Amino acid sequence: MDFSGVTKEFEGDRIRLRVMDQRDATGQYAGWLNDPEVNKFLATKSATVPELQTYIDAKHKQSDALFFGVYLKTDGTHIGTVKLEPIELEKKRATIAVMIGEKEYWGKGYAGEAMKILMDWCFSELGCEEMNLGVIAKNTGAIRTYEKLGFKEVKRDLGYIRYGDELHDQVWMTATAPHTSV
Ligand SMILES: CC(C)(COP(=O)(O)OP(=O)(O)OC[C@H]1O[C@@H](n2cnc3c(N)ncnc32)[C@H](O)[C@@H]1OP(=O)(O)O)[C@@H](O)C(=O)NCCC(=O)NCCS
Image 1 (spheres, rainbow, N blue to C red):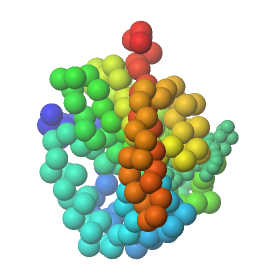
Image 2 (cartoon, rainbow, N blue to C red):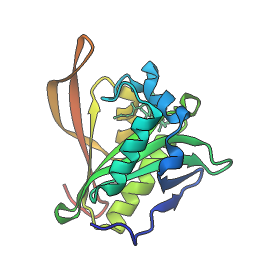
Image 3 (cartoon, rainbow, N blue to C red):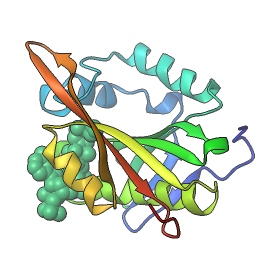
């Protein structure tokens, strides 16, 4: 879908979301992905500012992706990212991924707030009936966040991905639109 004419800025109680551009490819953002605590359960284990520039540009060009920054409403601080990819309108579904990179904002519900904004939009404006995501089984904080948003485990792949010496299981989760029966 061509999202060029679609509203892509959102405001929640404490955060704003807007599609990221080259301004957002900062050392701060690269620092999140280079931090072993933040990237522990992420496939990306390092990043440079030029790599982020390339990535943000690639997401702009993709017709089935929208890549948002998460910003505090108070002072505009960039605290994370949330991505819809792929958005599969013909299948009435989208896949979502979140990262709160600024660790001082962990455990305060920001990931949930950012995801809820986009889930509501996908359900009510894009006509999606299903949201999907994948998460490493050991990422219990993330899974707790997702369960609170209504995601349920639908599949588990044992030994799905290797990070260093360790093979990790992957959990696939789905949330359905409020009116949709499972
Ligand atoms: C995982 C992550 C998205 C959670 O975001 P968050 O904004 O801190 O989550 P919330 O504040 O909504 O927390 C929701 C629940 O998870 C719990 N939680 C959050 N981080 C946790 C952690 N590291 N360990 C255990 N529990 C955690 C919170 O206590 C809360 O539970 P509660 O309300 O019952 O107390 C965030 O820590 C993050 O981005 N981590 C790095 C990147 C990542 O792993 N992304 C997910 C990839 S699938």
